[in-house]
Amino acid sequence: MVSFTNPIKASAHCDGPCGVYDPASARIAAEAVQSMTTKMLALEHPDSSNTAAMAGFLNTMSRYASIKEEQAHLTKSELLVLWTDYFKPEHLEANPNLHDLFWRATKLCSACKVEVSPSHAQDLMDIIEEIHNVFWATKGREVPWIRAS
Image (cartoon, rainbow, N blue to C red; front, side, top):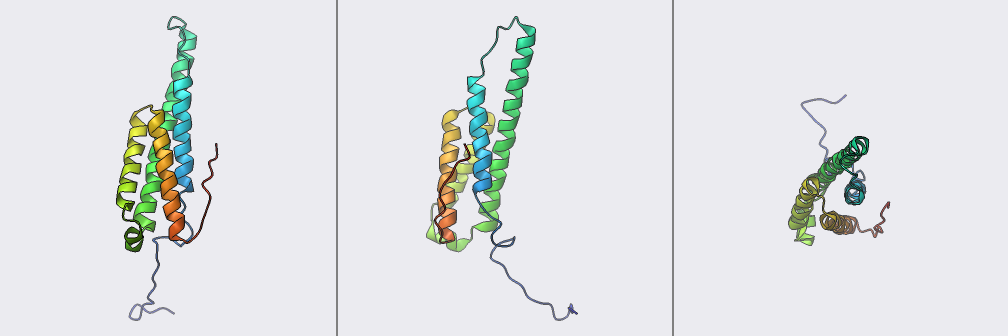
């Protein structure tokens, strides 16, 4: 029986059990941002006098925009979990650009939410690849960068 007068001391490197963190979830969400950005720009605007076609266009465009914004927010959330829960002072010592890397990544998430910019969507993918490489280096592993699409 555990006594409150003699508690058991426990410690952990991460807030969650080690092995639960992976930048892949941020990559997947960012790929959706990039995909929706591409789809939005490729969507053909119908003749505005065709009410049914315009309704379909607006419905599809709003769905793409909603998904893009939701996934950009999810990307930011996934990155912030990595930044605040996984990375520790020793990682910052080994990677002095870590603060800037995450700051730029989360700013790109915000830009991708409010814009329809293929260049920002690609920049987001590129910076997540950098984070991927730093993350796996902290674990002493080489994990290839693989995109779902």
